[in-house]
Length: 283
Length: 170
Image (cartoon, rainbow over all chains, first blue to last red; front, side, top):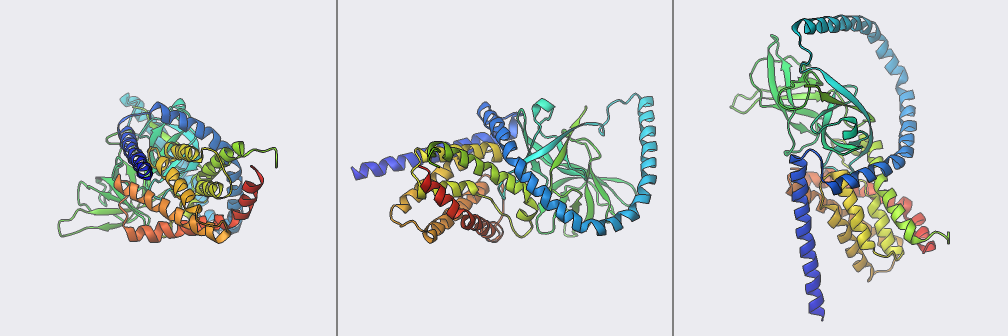
């Protein structure tokens, strides 16, 4: 009898292991290939999303109180710094408006309604974050009903923060750019060299210790200034051109035939998000 | 407290704990994820273990599997990880507790072992499916250590309230 029981347990363990591995394999292939998850996953996601919004509310309140105290402490220093910048901003704004207008007129003359830089914005707030070291995912409050599509870019006020990996009806999952994951697609980015030539490349990785994105697969070995701005190039896929990624801090130009790597300081902090914008390309 | 039945209280608390995990992670993620530490909040496991130790909930294995499934679908987007890990931990804890007396220190040690097992299993699965390539030493110093400290802190804070709750409500 005892031997029989042992066998039964063994069989149950084995079956559940196999089922679990099958489920993992199945959901990874769904994640990579299909635009929307399966029916069961969708139902679970919708239900969980609705309940989570209720739970999230008081926690958000606590966070707000906490951050407003910190803000109060920093306010004086910040004020000093900002005063210096305010004068510049007005001038830049006027210039920006003029350029924007000129750009529009030029586009009209060329009959170019849709270019790589035009995109629709969907604003969403962040409901939750995966409690896991290995998945840097956040869950946002807009889904396919608001027009969010898979692989769209997600921005905070300062710049690019991630990409949509799963779209449900009323919420979607966003993988942050700081994810060290070999499975996901790459962002194609570009940076201007010292003489103004465009250098294309891909975001190939992230260095946790120094908080730097790594740009690899670079098309040319031209010289790049420090603090040059890196933007998305709009090539390949559903990400518009001209989204700000970050500033160049360091270049490892290896003589020994190893590929060049450009280290980028991300413009947006991915660790303090409450509202994000999904950029949906128009073309 | 007598009108509330465990039948209703247990699932409510279970899902509250599940969503609190995510919300706490979001609210404090600048402290949870730094270059040197990475904390995984596991309040839901605390609720499960306290329920195993201090009350008799019907179908607790099924409930833990169900909450694991929601965890997988909602947080990870990859099914089949916690749907297996949570029932396994509940089962193991139940087997172990048959031989032990329930006291603060004993349950704390059991909970410590549970958190360690869950974190290691989760790391192992993720490195297996290529979601991470972090070395074991880095995993232990960056993730396992801080996760244990954080979750034990919650255990110390919530042990007496939860013990009272589970013993009063039946």
